[in-house]
Image (cartoon, rainbow, N blue to C red; front, side, top):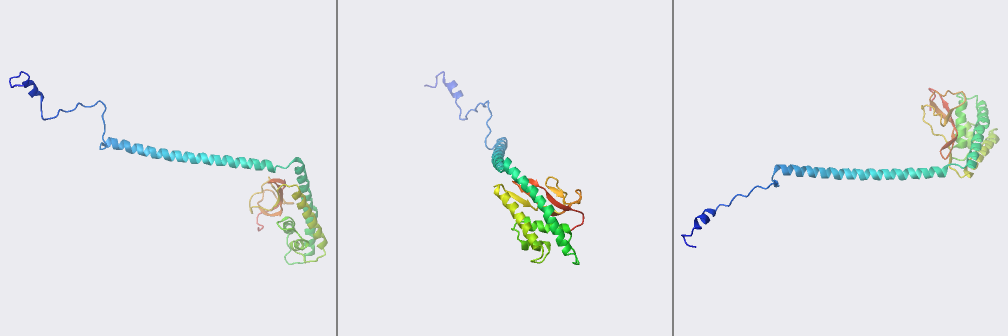
Length: 243
């Protein structure tokens, strides 16, 4: 193209060493150096962390609920398995009646005789204390013998009441064996809380003891079958009697 070309002035005017500025985009892009972008990224990171923590907590709670459901289900199965049949329940009711009869009509008179025989002692043990020791010997963890019964009564070996002590052992062991033969779990329960209020669901005041006074000690244990009360615990109540 020669210098006289009519297009030269237009071409020269359109060409420049300086690049033209780009038109701005409609959507604004923030670079990683933009403080607004950094703040958004930080917030997203915190939200993701909180979400992970919440998911972990939720999973833990769901597992805890599943464990509770399993435990309750197992307890319900166990409860159903240990509910006495009507015949077994009748057997245990009969055993409970005979147990209370044994305490009131045999252990109590035996304790009274022992107390009378030991009346010359300087410190005579209260009758209800001696009954408590006798029931512990007869219905505690170990199998009773005439010797252990005499010891509990405070009597010497081969005392004149030895024959009566042997009869008490026979009665207690027979009741234990009958309860065992039913196949149901049973217990003569001596557990109590000294100084606590009497719990009428499974405790009863002994003799003339007042029900509104705190428990001092167990005179005769409760008879439980599969954790059900068949005979209430007989407890001595009072204010200042030592445990």
